[in-house]
View 1 (cartoon, rainbow, N blue to C red):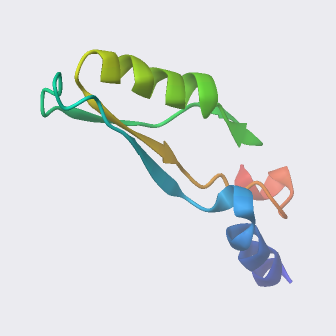
View 2 (spheres, helix red, strand yellow):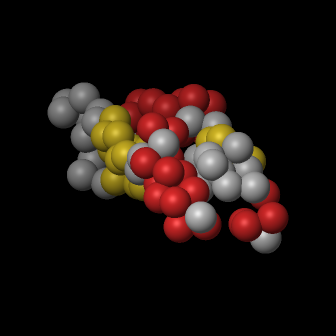
Length: 83
């Protein structure tokens, strides 16, 4: 049963990892890049203000930002499985 729940957790749309590029204008691009791993809590990530907002700030300074949405594994499993 635990394997069934684990499989369901991995397939939940909110737990599909992504890497979203935010590229600066080519006129100011420095060639530098940074991977941004937003914080958050057990149930979600702060993708907007700790992801996109930081990437856009980097873009203003000519740096590419790549926002990583990483898997939390919080869907379909009780909290005690993650301790």
